[in-house]
Length: 228
Image (cartoon, rainbow, N blue to C red; front, side, top):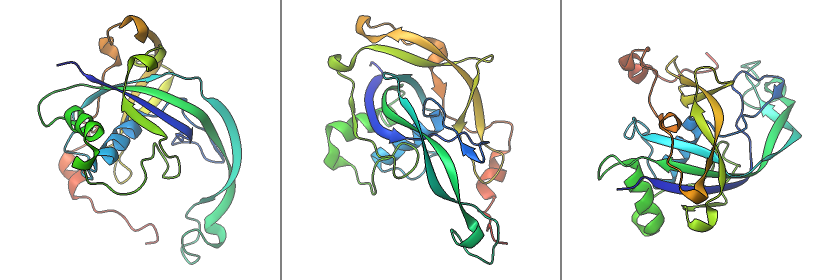
């Protein structure tokens, strides 16, 4: 069976560069880890390891516009002040992207694959149970539309490609507790969806943990208390 293709639009979002501090830069495209998390949220799955190994491909259909806002952000400076209080909050500049339109492909690999679950959720919304708004990135950056890709959305696309010499370093699997985050190097390629060009092999991204880090240590490591 063919892999499924999705059309996703998000009016405003920011995909923060992890190492950015005083000025919160955004990646030009949502990282694979972010897209994977959004797909799990859409089908109501809270255990991200169930579909580990899923392969996806991501392409930009639009040229998102950049803007900068000044917002209040939390940090951990003084444990006595509490979260978001006193010196634990400060103004910082943040980059935003406007008019994000994506194509996301998901490989089929069995009856219970993520591709099958996503397709079922879109065709039969009453078959899933989920909570909260569907966001791509921050909880306030809500998805405006998500659907199976139709002929009307088939257009020129900038494709995210695995590239050891690429300039973009994006998280494939995020781990905020230990060093299990898996990073990949990427660059942009081009594909014309109107003439049904096949997805190149180097566009497929396997969602998985950092294999260098012991998996058992990740699973057994409790979430730390930031104020201890």
